[in-house]
Image: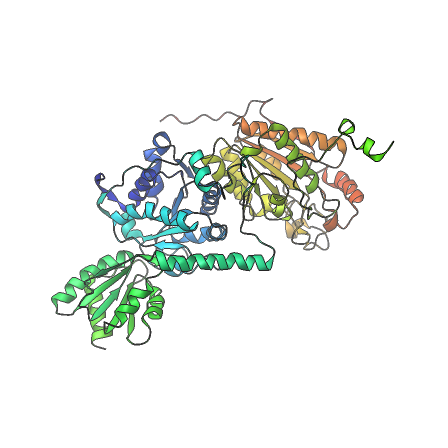
Length: 361
Length: 266
């Protein structure tokens, strides 16, 4: 059993990275996630595990440093917040196109533009539908507690290496800034160069050894037929994710007549809203998508046959609702309740919205 | 004497470096890239560092550089090669990393990345091929295009008022304390090719010795987009580029002590 601590979500990302045997962090300061790099610099993991920590000149540079290090089979992570993730879009597209593993943490703030430093979930589209150019997807994990901030770092790496695909931890200023108790993971040693050669020798660009062909990491292919095949291979990979790695949580859904669907910090609020609604005699459950890509379509489709309506609660103008509607079909009403601009809805507001938009309507 | 008597190991004066692949180069006849690739192959082979060298290729004419050298390569986004190389070098300190970049890639879209990588003194080599024009996209103005030079986007010649001035980025790089060896070379004659090879060798040795960033500019021709014969392009380069981009070493910290910076006391 790991060590129990009281920590901030952002600090836990740093701690989890060190403990899971990360080889490097490259990042650039931006509110509300600067504690990630500050914690790392304070911890000096280069003395402890040999992990590299570098403050880059921009988010553009940090994601391309990640691209470089990931190509050598290293376990590397970066973090930023919404405007910084937009700057990283170029590099993320290259990493997805070159099929490299890495973990990217987005501690979302309100947008568009410079927006606000307050929490938001308005990067759902950007994270799950691509974000950069081309047909690609990230593996997107949405933690709703400080504990999950810890757990999803190693989980993100496992999935990233399983699929050779970038994984994003999509969180927000609420989870990043709040303090909770957390059970920290035990240390996993970093891989040696020999272990990397053994495990990933078929693709890593860490210097051509006598016993292998040279490796080339690129997303470029001038032959259209081959480029289409590369795209088809990516699509097959995403389909496999949908078969094997959908993550979600169902709370009080067994007897539910109405369903809340929410991820991340909104799901925490909805958990309380479920209790409040049930005190009023409304049988409501909560489905929390944990993997936003691959999206839990099947459990939503199954619950659509059980409940009278669904309310999708997000801190945005209505983004995940499109995926919920697609999964639920047209047999029941699927409504949205959201706040924007850094405003966090209260559980009472959610219950009120449920009554007004679904039960009363 | 028959042909087989002539083709004989004892008569060998030059052979293709083993590190050059059999792939036909896509470069235009007369282009400088092929010679620079060959020099890189020779240097890496001579130094015996094939198994630990990683090349980072750019966006531009050298985008396919990875087709021609038998080493591991990674293809960077436009201008980002120094950041990619930083990621490789920092997490693999025992490896030898170089970027190969053109003037649009390095001195325009990638200005931030090259300045900061050099300023941090990343242990890597930068090969900067400056032909004063965008080759791959069809001959548009580059940051290094000379005043008055005709390109696809300066059909009446580069005008300072409209287009700004040609950028001597290598002079800026030489000011940065993270660089140890900064030089400007060319490959238009047998003598300059030999000199350039020495410079590239020195740059790789400095990176291996962890002396910071080494930067080798190679002033080059783009006869196709300059719309000249290869011979005429070489003459044009000597007459017009050399007076502005003067060949020679700009910085050699093995000869001169680098400028000292004293940290604040905490």
